[in-house]
Length: 459
Image 1 (cartoon, rainbow, N blue to C red):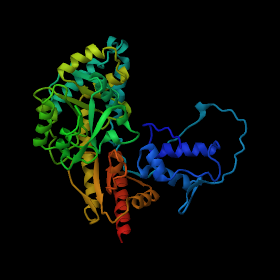
Image 2 (image 1 turned 90 degrees about the horizontal axis):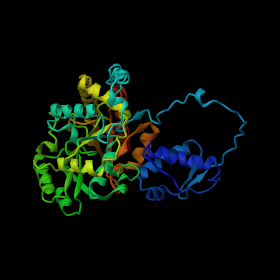
Image 3 (image 1 turned 60 degrees about the vertical axis):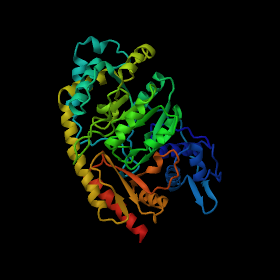
Image 4 (image 1 turned 90 degrees about the vertical axis):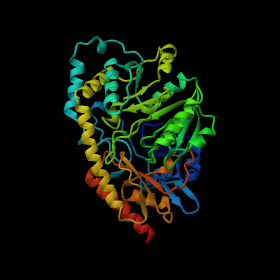
């Protein structure tokens, strides 16, 4: 079955929408058999749980029916008689509704921390000012004032000393990786497995790449050394999604791997670095990089809002020179006004205040989750006191498919960590619990449901 997936919405929503449309347009007719959950998951290279979510929703709404040992079939539906009615699209009000009441996905920020007034002022000031930089064309590096703001931020908060002219602004980490790919003439990338590169629709397919296993203390460097990767992408301060923190001895070992050959580089994604609660922020790998082989990547999706879509990278000096000569025609995809407003927001001190407020709020949310899980002997949770998501391991006697189905029925959304592996069917019984955008009450109530469901499934 042909289904065109993208990264603009949850995958189960896209599968649901595609099959629903095929049924409504009679491409799929009454009693037509759908592919099995496992077959469709293999065809689309996504997890079984994702397809199961979509089929479950379609079945609940009466589009399909399940038959034991036979599979899923298109249900009989009536034909809606449609009048030829014209309307003005501007008169329509469309309200987006979240499918789940308790959405423990890892995206978003807490809206109570978002400084609406100050950000509005930053945008207003950017539009009102008579500045040639705002009205003119910005080169591929991004707005100079924003690069200066980022440079100061890195010096003050991440102990990285960098010239603004080594900073490249873009609209997302994926876009930056594409730039790096073109800059280094299509190198072999090593991606953490599990990791963000293997989540969703196969972003890794854009690269010549190899998966690198992740251990309890970060990427498996011995495994890396056995591969032909010459560029490795890591999240050492807070590995995503496992939350592992890479110790100093492994950091040095990883740097030495890069130093052994001229064409080797490390991409450090400083994911969730700001959010450390009972420990001090961990110094980036970049601060140890005496030979300038680390490409540092950061973004403002977790600290301001994902809607801005602003990310940046710090290139080593030798790659910066190559960037000017090879990619000089590149243009920054981020709106000039967004860049200017973000620069003003950082320089005003309001950005720091927002991050500090987020840290306090997220620390409390983290403790709520820990307190709820702490009394359940069937859920293991390693307390790392950092990040905006936690990883829980459920007792192996519980079937993960049954657990996810039961949680769905109670309007609880959690993500199996299997979704972040190249092989989507690992059956790890490990789940990612994101909490950034959820309220205290929703986290508390949602976790109560998770714990109760786990206990009931065991008993």
